[in-house]
Length: 280
Image (cartoon, rainbow, N blue to C red; front, side, top):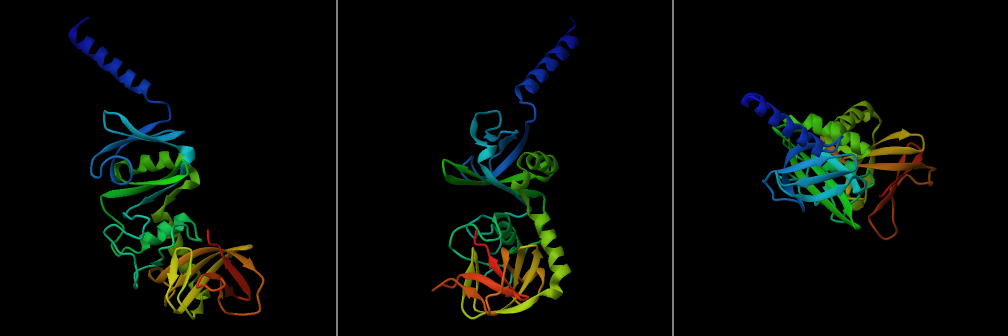
């Protein structure tokens, strides 16, 4: 066999071996860890996603960890970086006029994890664009919650999103999509908002509301509702909290209902009904 033909055969064999080594349905991408228990911030890793697991490995080296898909609680895709402990990386937490006031009571607002992360992103004053994209993966390991924040190149974003979204379904949360949805909802229903007064510093889930006047907007879907709180004008930038609620019969009062001896909001009045805010 001539040398060029032999070289071509060797290349073909190596390629077929590499393809055979990868499980069907798996895809791999280069990522850059930002924070979390796997790898070193700023150093590249290989993420391989399959139907049953997501693994992180040193390029051309050993696998550092494998996360079963069944243990993943959510994965959030965002053009901005933020953590769950109120720190928006390179941004602001919005304790003034730029965004929601986040409490220190833990994690898990009534609107759900996706809404919390959406509001964290809304608190950032910088526009949502750039050459990078960030993903926050959250999973449970032996009852302990783990979280990893990493960067994905925008050139890989479309196939990465398609693969992971196909595997995780509703556990995949796209912050830009959520932001667009909320913006459209606020614009379509802003004329329906009514004023409400918090006579004391109040809170619900992760969100705090200093004493004062607010406006609320509720979008009802049967016996459930999505409730938006605004500080001042009913605009996207004045959004201070989003909650899921159950629609209940009126209690005979138009005031805010609190938990006994606390500033925790239990329900708010809305057009002759009661909206009972869900805390988790």
